[in-house]
Amino acid sequence: MRGRKVPSFYTVMLKKKVEDLLKSALDERQDLFLISMTVGADNAIKIIVDGDNGVLVEDCMFVSRAIEHNLDREEEDFSLEVLSSGAASPLTLPRQYIRHVGRNLEVITNDNKNFEGQLVEADNNGVQLEWKAREPKPIGKGKVTVTKEVAITYKEIKEAKVKIKF
Image (cartoon, rainbow, N blue to C red; front, top):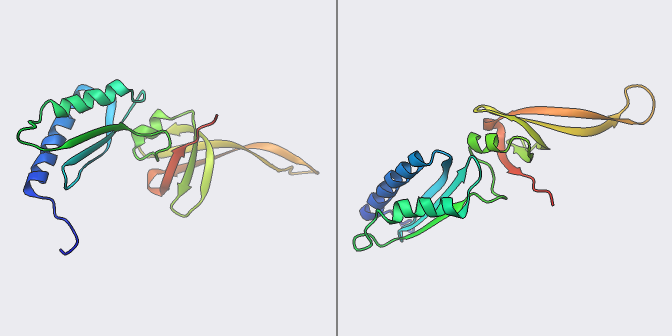
């Protein structure tokens, strides 16, 4: 156990309390969903949320207040940070993919294949990407534009990010 901090009983209890408060807040606002939550050994609470319609500052404030106003600072010494999943953050949940249908994604599979295309379909099993490619004509010289598509299950995805165009 040397060099590795074991969470104190207090940290474990704080985490459980925060999880319960967070669940209540997200039950109230079902358009928001949890990406990750950590409670550090120093009781630094970090929560990352996303939403079906994006996340506004007010949404982060709602989650923050739902937790902070229900913890007693006299009893618990903590810091709290509530963030939205950033535009450059990898997608991790099917719900995020579904929200981004119609946008361009870059997907790297577990076998290191790289796909970039429009997310045309997403469900609880995987995604379908579509893109245009130039290929040699079947007969004659020159190239022709073709539409390509690929279906990828979530298990096959190593990393996926929304491609932002400026």
